[in-house]
Image (cartoon, rainbow, N blue to C red; front, side, top):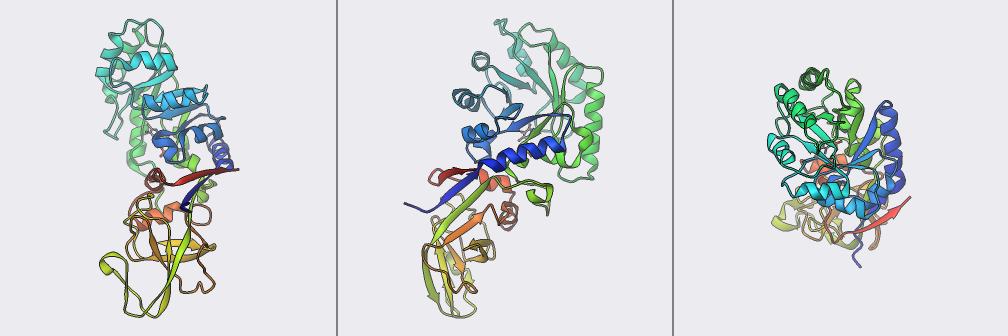
Length: 358
Ligand SMILES: *Cc1c(COP(=O)(O)O)cnc(C)c1O
């Protein structure tokens, strides 16, 4: 069996939820589990985070999976309904829907089913992706309020574009625009994602929407989850499958991008971009061999990577190699691959075995 394995630390997920609550003591927590729980496994994450007040998903299919797994909390479909026929399924599954566009209100207005759906009205305060412009907020709210098929408790939300920069003027502006747009309207407020929870305590409202923080991942430049009291929820590991002697001046891997500066040992580990390890990870990206740092050298290939074993004299075939997780922050690997930690955990492919541990 291939040694490549992602271990999901259930205790870390629970502990991270506790930490989110500590940082946002006045708010309820929507655990965002889109993209298969940021690659950690949707049902498994939901089970570990059973203490969450709600779950946020990208689409109805994830809501179906969560209900099938016995999840009873509120589930919020963050992109809302696509087609009128979605409404019946949302009712059947008791899913809340985000409403971010006039066309979605039209679909609700055409709906003849009297059973009320719970709605989160989303405003675009500066991200310019999904949401009503602030000046349309009152109108959209009034339209929704007048519909018999919409629950009267409408939540009000917006999403930050740059909250991971803790002194960013855009976020201050977004908070201000949101406050003005919803002032006087009844309904719970929700503004903050993980970075908002960490850096913008004035924007916690009644609901925070935590994704990355629950998985122990930070998107704040130069900081890792542990800097904020979070623990990694995934460790990706494999084994050494070969150790080769390479002479000075010889090259390693595709396109011969790396040249051995001396006679040395190069280890080969069973992981590659076919498993979701980033192909763009450059020479010098760290791994842990037997718990000690070593560097990737040469190109990442589909099934394998090559590792500089200078300073790892005792290494032998079968020894463990950690790619990220406990002892090696995924944020650091992401930096070497010109991306963010979320992208890496989301990108683990189906051939990787998942195991759970406390
Ligand atoms: C993904 C998402 C979140 C969570 O963002 P994190 O940075 O992972 O905490 C919150 N709100 C919405 C609308 C999202 O799409």
